[in-house]
Image 1 (spheres, rainbow, N blue to C red):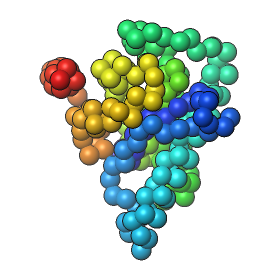
Image 2: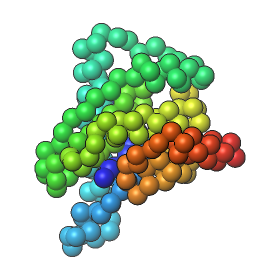
Image 3: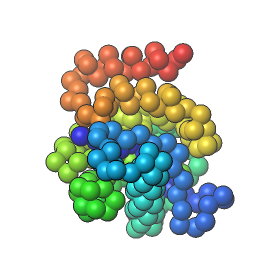
Image 4: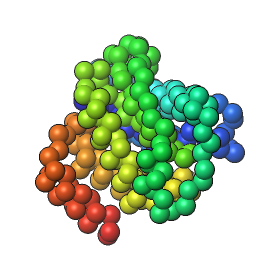
Length: 196
């Protein structure tokens, strides 16, 4: 099961200090481990926000390391170059130890596309190839249908559309095995919704 999907900044933003990352969108799936504790709702919300921020900082660090190691510079892309940008995206996976920040061990898959990081936090037993395919599909739809190569701050205005994408492609945090015919019908359904 996927525990979390998030979109965050992975390049310096003028409003942030050098090592920070801004979470632009996040969605948590599954049981909230904080619900099992006796914390107040506001404390639970702040704890969850801190966990997501920690993952975003680690993804930002991983993207930076990957880009430095490859020696490639990011080139600003124009709207319409989504397929090319996604093909050249940096990607990776790392593990979060139990207790750092989730109570169980987790796998984190990320894609660094221009100044944005797209991330799935999965339980360790998940099929990582399936998760990567799902992450690439989600990222492609976000880039193509929501035109995210422009101002990344606009992501905040498109959260309801991202929610619809997630409900179709990642229902309740469950990864879907898609055959070709089902994938095509899902693509048509998403395209019809995004055209509205």
